[in-house]
Image (tube, rainbow, N blue to C red):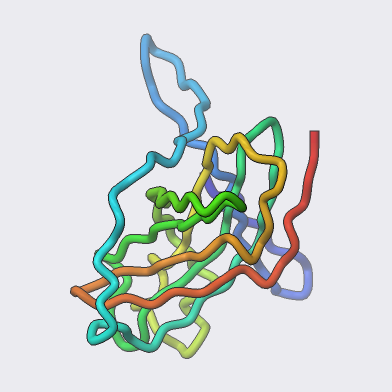
Length: 160
C-alpha cells in the first residue's frame, strides 16, 4: 500500500508502507509480504550495466529487516525488472532474498522518464543476527539479463 500526500505549495510525495491487503471472507486483511530466500543470482561481469538506486529506509524491528528504496538500470524500462537483497553475516554466510517491486511515481520526474516508475523496492526479511551492518547489505537490480548493484548509504535504524 502506498500513501500519497500533497501539501499547499504543490509538492507531493508517495511513501511505500510495505503492507499489502487481501480480501477474504468479505473483509480486507492487512499482511506483510516476507521476502523469501532465493538462489545466488547470475552476476557475470559482462552483464553489469549502469544503474541508479537509493535506499530510503533501512530499519530493524522485531527480528525483521525492512528495506525500502528504489533502483533501475539506465535506459531500460523498469516494468519487468526485479530486485534481490544480499546479506552477508560476520561468519561469512551470504544469503539472497527476493525484494518486491512497487510503483514510484515520484521517480517519473527524475530524468523526466516514465520508464522509472516501477523501480520501487520493498523487502521484509527475517533476521537472526544482532551484528547486521549496512556494509553487509547490497541491493541488486536485474532487467533484460543486465544487472546493477548498490549498497545503502543510510545507517540502520533500530526500533521496538
